[in-house]
Image 1 (cartoon, rainbow, N blue to C red):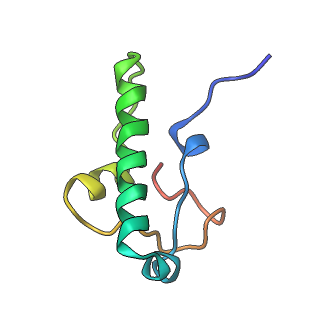
Image 2: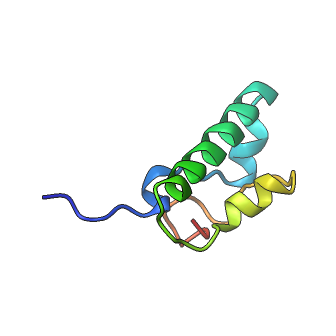
Length: 76
């Protein structure tokens, strides 16, 4: 039996260096998928605090994290 998933289980984080390597189309795809995933979580009625990455994306900011993925909780 599977346990509950967190938003972090269905997201991908990028360091600043990794984010800079993405082309504009890849960044747009990332933004669209992340926002869609979050909207699905909200639509099914799960009540979770809005992750920092979603706040950044909604404000048009770059969503990269300071640490390498997996080193700490990036706020997902």
